[in-house]
View 1: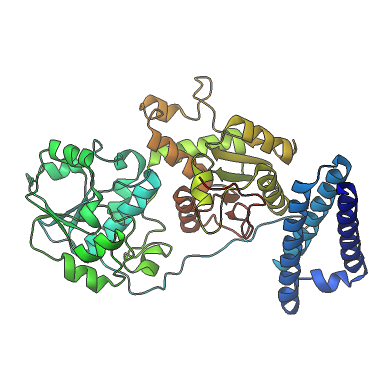
View 2: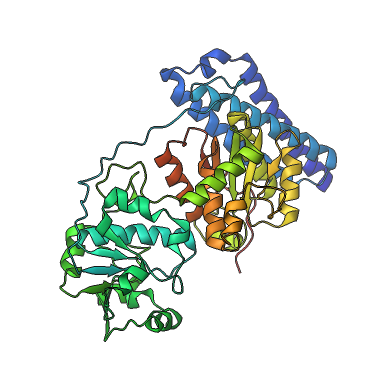
Length: 464
């Protein structure tokens, strides 16, 4: 009985595929595939149907026990991918036989009036960032810069004992040259001002400060008499307030205290469109404000010259911790390795890279399977450990910076920002920061995207 069910199921599949193939072969192919404006909507609809067919094929493949049927299904899935690539190539106006990525211009900044930063003498805003890793902290830092400009205060970078060492990862001199010499102080420079009393007026509940961070800040000689929530009722209800207008922020946080701390602002949504636009919300004439320091940039260039060359694809493949993180979201972002390989293969056909530079925390078994599925034609390269015979990382080695995780993370970001094309991990702020750099540097193009964009995982595990 089970065998008859499988056989009937298989006949349905074959009939459906045969009908689809006949329709495809007997259609006016040029009518579908030529990049004419009048056919974009039709080709988009065709791509959507093909992806839905692909999803159904994967589900049947997972349920199939007969190896010959599974092999036949796999070949049909691959054919589906090739047709999707052909249609996608025609929609974007390039020859799918030759590959190619179209550059994108994000130079224009239009969302709202840009803010000019004119800090008052002897008024400071202390950066306090506690949530997540370095990418989250960089977002928190950028928002602090915006808030310091709104409040006409000089921004004070945190001491490395409390937060990341921004002086090691960022080009501080460049920030000052773009925004003004008096806009920013390192913590060491701030200590010379002999200001030790802070007013903590918290954007989020409790300034998002735990006991450990409080001890570290006080160990630096700083103190505060109280810690007040700016929006106590809202902060207690959902953790952080929703006040999108800059005028609301200024009204709440304007004060005459010399040193102000507002705590972690990673989740703030003040003027979100203005803050998120390319180039940021502040008035300046630079291409980008937040960029890697010179040593990291030079090391990234030397790595590219040594291992990658001009035509390489960068892949940020976040795995560790993301299985659970993604599966509790409305749409999971954690893809099985075979499905991820199919998505990457389509991007390879599109961008035609010679090599792929991979940044990942995945287990070796996952990366080995991924390379096997992608095949040997486009090898995957990861950043190797230091070898004295290789000189590309000699500068960071001499400075003793290769042991700093934040420096290495910024190095990986910089290499990816220089790639011909980039595939990121959906839901990752590390990916978001690479996208920001690529857009501001002008290296972003039509081949960029996140892994399996527009798709759902073809298998999702139950939650705990």
